[in-house]
Image (cartoon, rainbow, N blue to C red; front, side, top):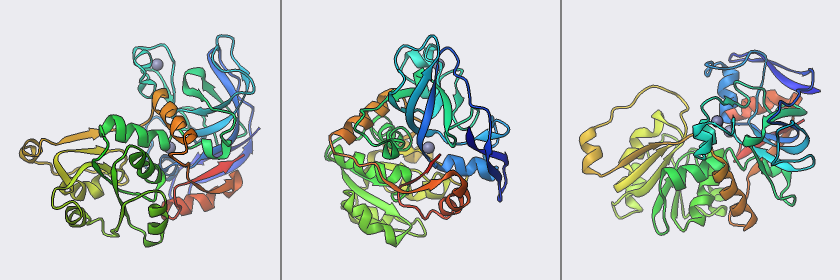
Length: 342
Ligand SMILES: [Zn+2]
Ligand SMILES: [Zn+2]
């Protein structure tokens, strides 16, 4: 089969489409024919060599996989050849304590798909049954690949992480990116008032089209005063920080009393100063969120089927066009997700 193989990470990664043996499913795994695979910021970080821990040598990247099941292992009982599926980000065992708790994304023995195990930038991939969620056949696979990461991640971040409820105000940073475009819609569907923060003026109209009540263009990420001005000085109930350190201070200053900051991304690394006194006087919560469980993906599927959230895939590329994708994502040009199709 054809696969895009990462030979050597670096700022100019060595990567090529190669002919490699098709993977064989284990007893609890399914072989999936990949129809589309989203290109995530995680893929960019592995390609650049920023993320190295646990990365498999000669890796096939890609964890946002939608496709058709072609073959299943002997113990598989929930998916069948011909089923349309989307993958979680982790190849979960399905039987450990975490999996039993419905926290498959934190499986005690699972490997990251497209990280510790080969992923979906290939014609075929094997994924454990526990990490495949069945899709209604009417959802186009070209768009359904975003239903776990990043759309399910947005659901996890706002619902579980932020405890967002109707009538609250939410700030979405990185609003034009993969998590952001979906978080804007998930927040809107929850009945929240949405303030979308983007560094790019060209994305503003499209964010309003997705349901943002207000768009703040902040190339320098200094948006706290704008948030204060549009909330009568109260601040936002939930602030989704997908940028990590670089946006931490502005996110913190944007929080209302009893506010929750959800950190769901880190683009630079490093540490931030945090005053415990401010945390307690604000009755604030600081929450980290990464990945999705099956439950979050099911919620995402329901939202899409009800027409309340639209998957945002702005461009599709072939595997051999990976360099264009790498450069575009590095420069944060795409609106929403771009995908690769084998
Ligand atoms: Zn992803
Ligand atoms: Zn497990």
